Length: 294
Image 1 (cartoon, rainbow, N blue to C red):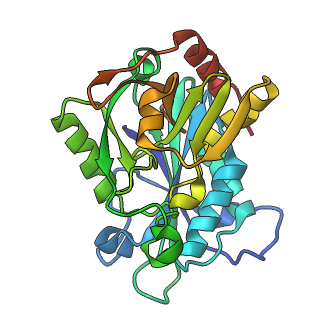
Image 2 (cartoon, rainbow, N blue to C red):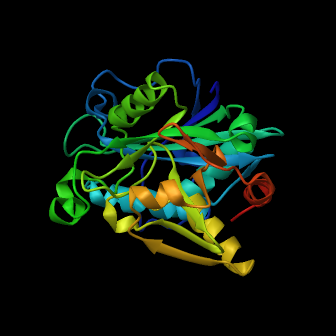
């Protein structure tokens, strides 16, 4: 993804209320030197982020993304971001997007050292071409995440429900999936429960029911999944959060990976076993996800 625009945000207290925060934004060269070498986001991955899909200049699901950014900040003991300030900054960045699809990334870092003011910035980048994944689907392999289903509740310091900048494990999982001849991975617990993909939520269709793993299992509560479940509910389908076994994924009538940028990518194979792709339903889901959503 080629960077197109970047904006640095001077942090203000969450209780600060004003008509405009434009004086707290600084446009910078997205490919130029901006961050100091001591920045903890680079040294430790000590921060949180969100990725927002942009369609024809419209930033999708801004409210839910800001809510999740605030939740992640709370989990890692960062100051609460000022939602009004960030919303205005997102609008400023989205104004630079043209026709087609792009992606806005929100980054909130701990800064230069413990106790310093956080560092915040937003980037705009072109989105990758996801047409093939949305139509032909993605082959996935299941990879063990290394903990049992109940670990997130017993060990909150693992930050398993926060969208942190520490994505080395996620990227390693995708590389391992490709080494095994697949396109992506799905994490499972050591006791056999489905969690999520490295950069996506997992949903299953069983008859007329749509199911996704319970978010309290230490996974991100996907903004795209939430929006899609609301759409499916309006269409008369039943939706549910459940503990999903690996066998449930393999036996489901259909399954998808959902994310803000790739949108709905049907799963075409699990661990080498082919899975039926529902092209008509997938096209309908992506038509909804490409429509303006707030």
